Length: 393
Image (tube, rainbow, N blue to C red; front, side):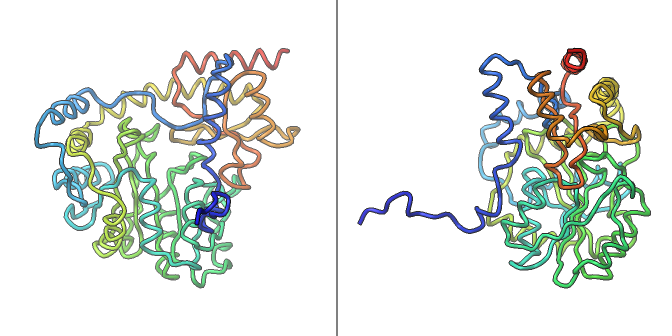
C-alpha cells in the first residue's frame, strides 16, 4: 500500500525547535541581495580573515600526500592533542593530559550535542543562560531535557545571580552552560566567577560547561575554568579555533575535562561521526604554534573595526560598555524604542544594514542589538554612513 507523504510525521523533538535564526535570516538576506538591495551584513560572527599563511601551506602540502585521505582516529591525531595541551599550558596555564583529558571536535557546536547526550537523560534539567547562545536551548530540547533559564542582566554585570540560582528547581539538573568571555554581551570572566561556578557545581552535583571560543579576540588575558582548584572534578571546557585562528569553516574544536568525562563524551561522539581530515589536523597543529604576534596582528584589525562599530552603535542611539571583549559589540537601544526587533528591521529596510536583535539570545536581550566585527573597515564605514543618512531623512 502506498503511504502518502502527508501521513508521515516527524519525531516529536522536531517540533521543539525552529530552524536556526541565522539559517533563515541569511536566506532572506540572499533574496534581498538578489533583488539588488546590496545588504551589508553585520550579523554572523564568521571571521572574514584567513588563517596564517603557513597553516594554509601545511594543509596544501599534506593534502598532496597519497596516504592522507583515509579514515582517521576518532580521538584525533596524537600530534593534535599534544598541540592543544601545549596551547592550554602556554596561554591558560592549565596542564592537560593529551592522551586522556582532551578530545578534538568537529567544531565546538557539535560538542554541545555530544556533551548533552553524554550527561542528560530525557526529563533531566539543564541550566541555560538568558541571554545566551541559542544552541544550548535547541540541543537541550532535542535531547528532551527540561530547560531552566538563569538570568544574566546588565545590572548584575552579566554574571549569574547565585542567590537566584540557589532558589531554582535544581533537583534533577545535570548540566549548566556558561560562556565566558560571554556571547553576546562581551562580559569577561574573572577567576572569582569561575570559583563560584565550580563551587556551585560541586555542591549540587551539576556539571558546569564553559564554552570558551572568544578568549583571544580583543582580550589580552586568557582564563580557563579548568584553572580553578577542583574544577576538573565537575567542569568541562570547550574551545575552538574558529575565532582565534580564523578557521571557522575548518571545524576545529576541542573539549577538555577529566578522563572519565572525556571517555563518556567519546562514547557518544564515536557513534555519531568519524575522525577529521588528517591534513586539516596537521595544519591545526601548525596554527596552535602561532606566537603572540599572530594574535596581535588579528587584534589590530579588530580594534580598528571596533572603533567604527562603536560609532554605528551610537548612530543607532544605543549605549554600550566599552570594556566588553570578543567578536561582537552589544548595545542597549534607546528608551523610546519599542524593542530591538523594530530597530533592526528599520535599519535593514531603510539603511540596508543587517544587525542582530538581541531577543534571539533570550528575553533578557530584547532591548539590545548585536553587531559583528566580521566585516571590513570599508564595509563598516559604509554601514555607518547609511545609518547616518537614514537618520537625516
